[in-house]
Length: 524
Image 1 (cartoon, rainbow, N blue to C red):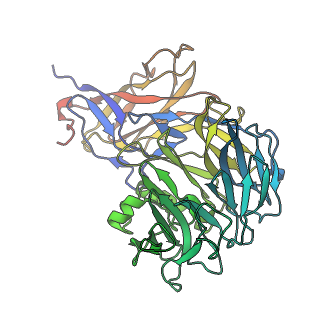
Image 2 (cartoon, rainbow, N blue to C red; image 1 turned 120 degrees about the vertical axis):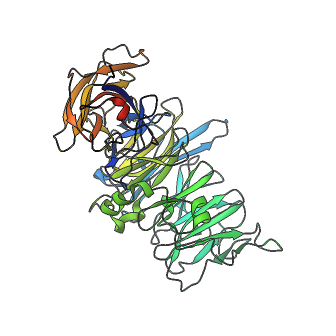
Image 3 (tube, one colour; image 1 turned 90 degrees about the vertical axis):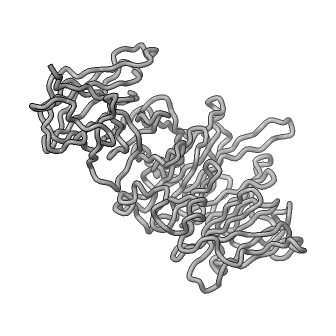
């Protein structure tokens, strides 16, 4: 007798995609496997190396006392300097309200400068042991020496730049409102010489009347890339290695790319051997892709979630977004303002460990800014710290799945609907199981949606406080889940301080009146 039942193992082959339909028409592999090529929901999860969704670690407060009466933290930087004894000294620097503050790696922040422009987006450049900080066109650039504790106006007569970078032993700066197309550079090995003093000078990037301004800089090895925007967009390259002579600094006669640039300096980030950046429509791109394809939108890193960005992001506040990569975890975090928020209040996570970017959203973290920080209180692990809208800096990657140990958040991964390649055949769902790595004596929820029916939910126990179990299949108690033509699965975990790591969903499917050989195989 031919069996009408087939047990199918569903695994995960892609991240969050918002720009395709809610269903797929794909058959089962010859071995009884089924790979979901993407997720329709990926909230508060990251991806294991095999693609499995895992609830993100939590976040804990760095500072116990609120900064600046709970104002938005607009910028954050991890500043290290070696002292005379050969020991690294760490300061975490923040811009909040009208002040610049720093701690001594202890979470206790104090003012190092006052009178800054409120709610401006700062920039940090490490140069010869000093931290150069710019905030807005109305503020003088600052220099901070953690060795002496001195924070003062940058020496010499620097332009009122809004951002800078280090390149060929000089500080390069732009963002001067009166001369928006001018790129300035200091003397070599001297950040206090500008405007032609010593070996300092300037370059004009593009046309003075091209409708754009310099919006960001990025130094990669021997090359300096200059981004313009925010309306037309272009990317230029600075050539040369000296202020004079045969190899004098110059600008490429034509832009490398036209039609796209960076919205602002703080959205430019390094990852792998590439550079990512945000454009004025909220899309995220890589420098290598735009050099190869120009402003064509399909190769954008964020193409899978374009419709989400278009529908939700507040384009008027993109200059306040931050992007940072954590190579230790192979992901980048981008803070974005959702809906009518005037400040970033959502995080997008881009996993770049694969050939194609895998995305998820992290609404658990209400982050205004983000920075890569060495956590000296946790064995010098590299983490992303975030500055909130509430005057607190928080460490991510906390073992406890909570916000500040008190607030829960929900991790959810939802698959598209599938008919297993046969939309006309009715099927009946039998026992369903979740293959997981147990994290403790916790529960998780499996949701199953059949056609237009309300979702059926099952509470599954991870089984034990013995987290040494490497792997376990946990079955639902229901022997029959009902009839369907299309079906969707969802896994979630929203209990305070509890975790979830799901590697597969197992389901037994029975055909109505027909044998399982009529279920199409993948590629059939």
